[in-house]
Image (cartoon, rainbow, N blue to C red; front, side):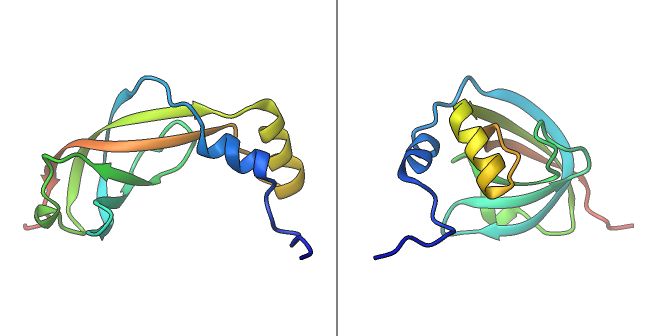
Length: 123
């Protein structure tokens, strides 16, 4: 079977799957919930200030102590979360840049540890 042009080589996939995350860094951002993924225990949030890689919209894994049914869209929250970073190998970075036109030097993972309402919009 012929390989598709969009296929990513196994060595790149393996590097990404097996990336080693460093110690978590605790971050705080204000923003709001965009989407709730009940089955995956995740949310998408939009922050007013971007995270390290420049994104303002991130997917956060929820810690066990956060109740998903209490989260509301359109409410401004203060999000406290752990940011974990796994740097990629130079060969993978170069492959993604030249073959996929993608500037990416690390993989990030975010886990929400605490959330507090800042403004519920009821005035």
